[in-house]
Length: 431
Image (cartoon, rainbow, N blue to C red; front, side, top):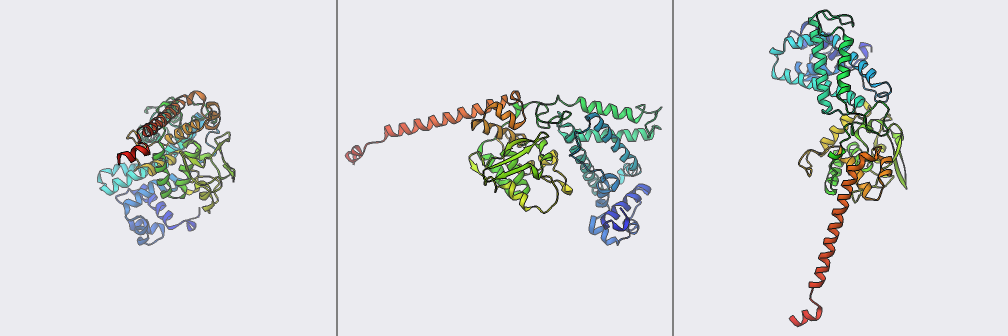
């Protein structure tokens, strides 16, 4: 990108990156940054507020950091171990370019103000979130929360870079006689082995051969808790207040049982509807799943006019993705869970714990079973095996038994009321 075609903000970030890397954060003044960027110093303060805010922007917006967007359309096409090696090598290459900045930041960390420290924390969390999205899209959900895995990978990469840089390590992949690893490739191989070893066995379903479903990685559907109708309707109301896209997304999660891992692969062409049906093409094999207009006894529009169709009609962007993250990229599973957490933050769950996006899928499965769908048919629609559905079948049976017991109690109450009600003649006699 030619310098004259860059925005003032990008020129300031690039200039700050250059100066911070060459002379340190403390020695760099905002005037120097503004002069190098060719803008007025007032513009710097208007854009970033302070040098601390500029530092946070450098850690997340500098071209050397931000020029590797996640292309979820190609994730899973290469073998997982190969894709991991390429991703980790790319991260280490980026750290090489950031080495002077990292050294400057670490060396001056003791002199940072509270604002500096907070800015660094925000910047590092943004980088961690980027890594979380990629690793989750590639690996699924391991035993640890994906953001914790990404944090550990970040720490290992930074630690390797620091150790390698102080022990005459060979940055080009050759032999490092004084380091802890014989080469960069050996370090990457060790990290890949650890990451793959931390994953559970792939779950069945319509995933790519080398992918594990983030929502069934542990095949622990016993832990899935379906939600009662009042809470479901509370969630839908909260989603409606949150905006068109959150409302449409929550509607799809609760109305079609779509997994968070499947959301990035939904496109506008995935939604097929007319006045008599609304179908989503879900997953790598494009299985057909009905998008219900009735959810837990309440109707949310019609097949052709509902939260999803309204969201689609309101859009002016050109992205093919059904749901959007930053820069009109497909929404990642990590962001799906973030949005779910935001929408449900003030809604109390039956167990007192935060509501999980997995509960939307469990609720849909149980509701479909209660409507009379067989286990085999639900397996085809959900992408889950019949064995994985066993715990949800038991939950549906428990729900059905509860509903029957309530009906019997109501019938008994009505019968008892009739027996105890005085006849019209008796009432007149008593008067």
